[in-house]
Image 1 (tube, rainbow, N blue to C red):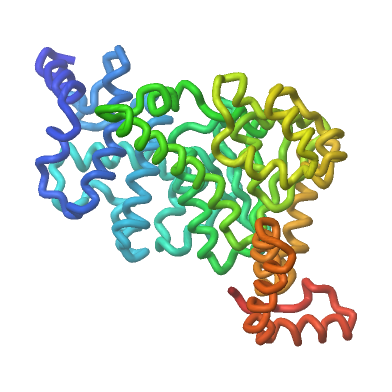
Image 2 (tube, rainbow, N blue to C red):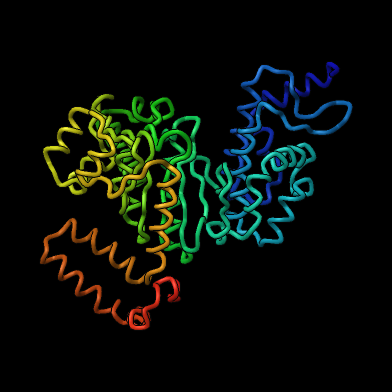
Length: 424
């Protein structure tokens, strides 16, 4: 490469994303922020590397993808493609045309269009499903090895009719919960709550263990260096932060669809917060659970101390686990009521979880979702209040065709799976 090429490469690597991308006639101004945020991820990868890769070679005038940036390109492409499908709300034809031919993108200069080609070309094998309209993303999720979803920490699939599988997917980091995870869980379950084609959710973890809990390296900045000019403002911002993190698992409980969680290996810290917000808990024989927070100098603050006592029922055992941070293994978890079934290995557990989810999905969604909501209400209220709420609930929900369909199926000795219920 000549001196001119090196100079140009250096300029491209060192210039800010705003300078490179912010001056164009952007066709979707309201999405400029997310667009720049996605490209910033890719840009940082180029800056960090000390190798002599360049975006454009001087002689051949083509734009090769950079091997060392493959994973970051995927993440950036996920952001950009999601903008296309969800936020830009393009038609399926327009989104497909843009994704397949980014070099013809309107309002972008030649260099910007070429960079889009590099990003999309490297990521289309994983994210090509986003070419479909926004509202179909949950229904078209695949069961590939990587995250086939608009998320970077979750892999979403549809293994069976009406069943959505949400997998914690940071196996190389032991599914540790980074900043993106806390946000994406909320987005994911809000989408699932509104998806009429989903009736049951199964949650599991990719890799060797379920989760190692909070990603301390990624989260340290928020926890150890909170913003604020004085004690009051710092405290206010910390409270906002904790409340936001609490919603990550509360959204599971608020989701009207039953959630079955399948745990293998370690379930540490935030993992216990997560599973206690689920409706049914299963585990493998090698699973163990640990309320780890006291070991890192804090009290568990996103759900364990509030939900675990109501899950297990023994206040003494909850206190022991929370105050000593000792491990609870599968047999004890089963006998104490933390999990309802123990499987010999992960494969058997996932098969059992999906079978159970299929049984639930075959029932009336009016009955199933109403049952979940009333169980949670009764947990937090007196028996009298629960009965009053139930009467009010069923005075409208009994007026459904599902009651007659279910009764007829029983009289005809049909399986619930043979009865078709309308979407809810």
